[in-house]
Length: 469
Image (tube, rainbow, N blue to C red):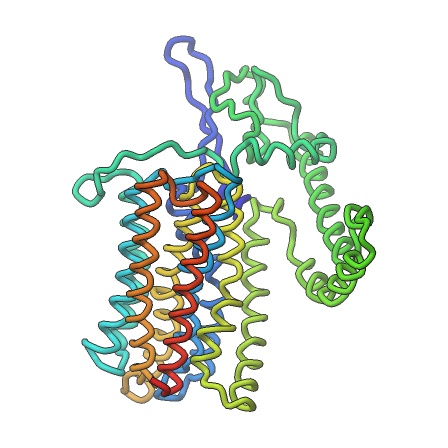
């Protein structure tokens, strides 16, 4: 996703005063749309694929499965509480990171809360315990409205945007000071692919801009069409480069100990690392088949990763069925706890990286709020759309929701606890000056508070669906 969002296109214009060509590198992806359509959708795909597989397995039954909705509502709680708890302590001691574009965040927050209000309405108010075809279709279409509204707010369209001043935000998803090390480390390997740079020549072959020059005056000879032989030579170098990286993925997958780990003095720690790597070797080899992100700006790696995740989600649904049957545990309980935490792990990793490496808190917090929206509009809406379409054309019946009362109760608990979470974030913005980081003591206190809210949600939801309360 980082490679995709860093993709830029070259725009050549003529300086009206000097009549010389000026090349400008513009980002292909809008920041706000990338946060919603790539970051949030990609990290929420485990929940989406699990819910979709659960819906396909239930085709032919008038009642919807419980794994999908339970996992997605539980995942929303995990996203909002534990991930916020992790992100708030990620900045270095004393450093603070705040949301630079409050307008976009408020729009995303509104659609996130409205998603769960809408879910409660169609479960308890509009058509209690029943999901119709139109309700499922409207649920999915609201994801498009979220994209349009967020983009309108980012571009400050009149009449539909909140008039709030936008703060400074870096041009790259990962700031240059953090990305420079990786670039310098690989400079020798890519020297034959990337042309040499100086103050007068733009790097027109690279998708990244490492020197943040922005605008370059380009001599006429540098914008002429390259010869066929030059193109063939360049393509050959490119193919050799990413094939070597792909081969290295398999080499690293079977390595039980890296060169850095061999320098560890503790024998016990090294033994634990070797044992752990031995256990996960099959998984590392499996995912080594995913092509490197250097190919097609990361799109092939992104799509292949989603396909692999779908395969794992199918295996998880099978295992969950067996556990529920043998142990007699309600599927909703498993969904609220183990499945929600497990499928939300990509959300946690993405937000943690953003909280560590970005100058602002926009992507870290936007991934949380947008993931919650995606969970409902796509994660629940699309599987329900599949089932309602099938039931409508085959049985002329709607889709019935088993244990809708328990799901609705979980939504009410989520509303109450999430209000407490947002209030604390707002208070941190007012008192400390930032949502993430700040004094270590208060960061840890905030983190503990968020974890308590998550425990309250899980305990009350599990007791309700189990019939205890």
